[in-house]
Length: 271
Image 1: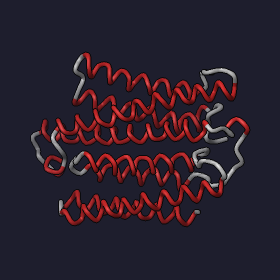
Image 2: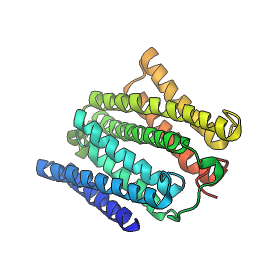
Image 3: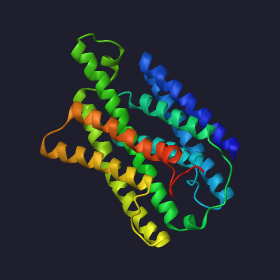
């Protein structure tokens, strides 16, 4: 099990290196290799999650190591599916680097298998937790798109056309990327909150307890809801959308990590 995880981590690193090399030299054969290696990493990661499931006896998303690993897996396959439909220049470079960073967090977190507490022994566990982490994956891709947008915009405004100008898509393409990620991530985030509320009612007798993770999930939801609302009513696109996507992803990360380590609560992955 640990061997599969470590091998997956290594393959993701190699894929990221190939994507960075492609970003620099723009040779199509390097991009093809990077893509194939990332697909291989995704398949290995799937095998690692299955092995963890067989060892745990439940869906492996109940501690920080498992949750962040599943987050990285969701982002990998989300990108690969997205890439099959939309071609966004050098998007894979930014996504693969973030996947490696997530895997690094997962690797340094405790990999100990701990028996589930009674409240988590429910069929709602794989439904709620997997949906919430898949939402984070698409919001993470929106974050990558937002960073790419700001880098490209800075190149254009400064009129100093450097390494990013020729290698990043147009501002319109990046704004569309942001929108596509949001239209997938936000419904998943909403569904994650709804399924969590139903599970809470079943486990604790109430739909909402204002637990720190519940509260920050709602804050994150309002940030993205505001972005969607202003995008359609006031025409908030481009730079504003990119900045809010970055802020929203920051809130999503705090919901996942900050709450667990700083605020605790019933939904904490630690302690």
